[in-house]
Length: 115
Length: 113
Image 1 (spheres, one colour):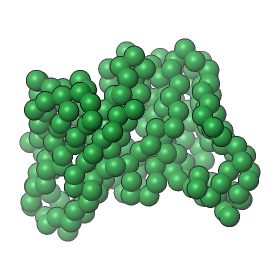
Image 2 (cartoon, chains in turn yellow, green; image 1 turned 90 degrees about the vertical axis):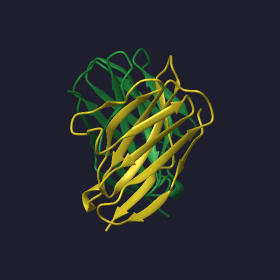
Image 3 (cartoon, helix red, strand yellow; image 1 turned 90 degrees about the horizontal axis):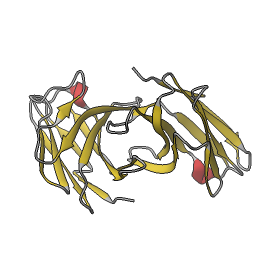
Image 4 (cartoon, chains in turn brown, blue; image 1 turned 180 degrees about the vertical axis):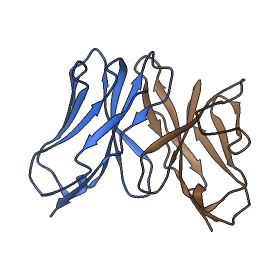
């Protein structure tokens, strides 16, 4: 399994500001995934981050709103830009632990509340 | 587009009972299926992974089955305990396994002491 650390674990933010979430993995991984979980909902994939290339965004998510960095094989950041109350969610980082099985592991999540 | 449905949405049972959580998916061309547990406000803990060539996986009191042809998976929890109270999520990877998961909305489980 992979151990994934996310920072911050939670934060309260003001409308119009931006927040960067960090994700650190204890081993080198090719792909890292960022998910959003809105209150009472399941998880929705925001984007896939590969080291050395631009992130691939899912329909409904754009780079200007959710810029992602992937500077190396163990670290990634997700920024939530120009936040509104609708961005209040848990944001989760995920990695694939075993390439041949596709099993995914998740961090503890970052709970953001936008006032 | 793959869609994943979980039934029931919520379940409350007395401690000690055996129970079954259901998951169905619309596209049977899956790479694998994974069951997760999520405690309130927390991240996801992987419980069981079933690859497309497998029919079931077991871990302790948990047993997950997969029937690709019918697009169904079940998670069986034996001798339930209050500590099993959580939301259980089913997720599938479709295609060649290079993508992220498609999640169901989960089953919110409460085990009454």
